[in-house]
Image (cartoon, rainbow, N blue to C red):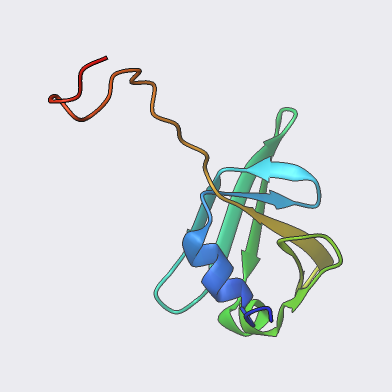
Length: 99
């Protein structure tokens, strides 16, 4: 059974977004739930602003982690991405362990 989630919840967990296929690592979700997304499209700076109502009204898309959201200019697809981190330490954390 899958857990029902919202775009607001996904944004709180996300480290980066795709908006209309563009990578947007600069985004801000303010205390009122308004979303601002900024990215560079070639040499052009692109900025989107979504109201709290638009964030709340966003609906899941067909792709995993994809959401459809609308602003005054029309519909957009957001994909929420999390950062991947790895430990580069080859040594064990247990100093008592003998190889």
